[in-house]
Length: 197
Image (cartoon, rainbow, N blue to C red):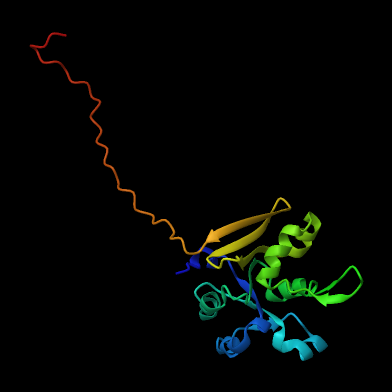
């Protein structure tokens, strides 16, 4: 059994790739998630069914549990930590939806696919990392082996990655017994009359 408590405590956003949900999309609507598409205008009209959606998630919420239990290992999307409001996070990510190839052709960049993000981030320069992280403190994605989570963050401008085993039990913290220390009186006893000093 995976223990998502190891990552769930600091995650407060997710980007869901609706193209990967298939028949699970009505399930998402059941949770009444306030999700906003990263697309807008014509792109949203034409591609809304396969668009990436950004939403908040809270520890222990029904939607978070559903995403972890059903989506983890199926490349449904990525998880984030940010202190910024939802609209600012959306604005940040909209900048990366389209990229230009060396030949000048525009194409969609599926950074919200964990299989793409975990390969892309380690190839970035410091400048690219700074730009792509922006208001994001941490990215959390499933590893190739879904028993593990990959956590990406910036440390002094460099990419830091952690690989967390979600199936390993967390060490149980046992209470430390109080050890009673008896102090002997430091008072100097007066010698008895028959004691030779």
